[in-house]
Length: 287
Image 1 (tube, rainbow, N blue to C red):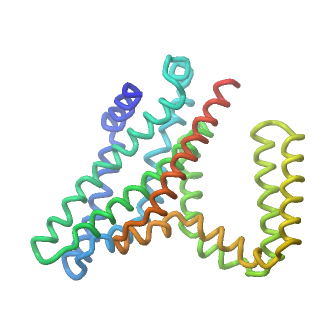
Image 2 (image 1 turned 120 degrees about the horizontal axis):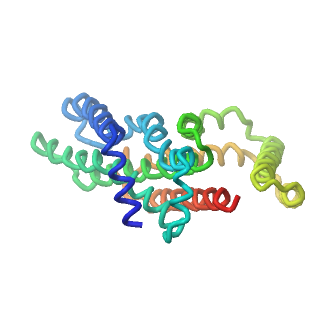
């Protein structure tokens, strides 16, 4: 794993990718820092929360080559037949990516010290905000890695990652299009299960299993609806709002509050997408 980590980290800085990413983050955060913090607000979290849109652009560009490039150049065959486990390969690549992301975050850690020279600054709130910013970035990176693992084209990987992250960023707006009635949630969940089963069937190239899963899921959903339809009121819209990853970090980044729920949430999402990345690579390896 360490060898994979060193190789990946070196590749980002032998090309311009790593330097451009670090420079762009620091320039944009620096502009917001000078505009907001040095002029009016002593809370670094206010700046960081307003620059989370950077992840929508930079993370797809940073992660698009992580696995897709290996598949396009056919070097993945050499990598996957090495004595290193797939889990170690994925974790090594992920650690290299968050190391690149960690460089500007490390520089941002000095910003509260700069603010302290001009007045009183709550250091614990400031560093909790930076932690929330870092966890949100790591979560987006894990999603970008998974997308990179399902295609050989870096451009396609970047576009899909951008669409997925943008959808997550705008999820509260999307949720507002759904009414809060129970029947709307029932129909929406049914369509969602159908799409998931179709996707699983296409990925597994199997028809019988997705059909069985869909029938069982619909039966369970309908039974729960008959037992307590009130629970379905606004349930789908609420679920969509939970998919807004940036909003989950609001308490930590904007308010500087230690929110263990958000930390566990982000770590779970990271672990889930790393697991999906391993499974995606494993499927291609056996094929």
